[in-house]
Image 1 (cartoon, helix red, strand yellow):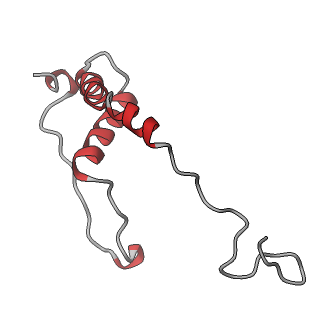
Image 2: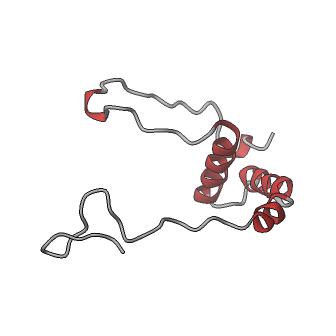
Amino acid sequence: MAERDEKGRFIKGNTASPGRPKLPEEFKSRAKTYADEALDRLAEIMRDATAKHSDVIRACELLLERGYGKVTPAADEEKRDSKITVRFEAGPEEWNE
């Protein structure tokens, strides 16, 4: 049982939760069999000229995260003074070429 102080709050370093339960290996193994198909489907959504922009952007984000890893925030956001400029060379009608 987790230790608490006189007001009933958890003592520092003590939690009542054991954490997220681990997924069974069988579940992970089955999920991995669909990885190639899932990536192909994300690529289809990314290239679909009729898809909503939000769906295309999310598909791009997921593909990039799987290929390069998730973006981590800067160590000290307040001290950053650099600016990023994004320029699109082509419109959505040219993305599928």
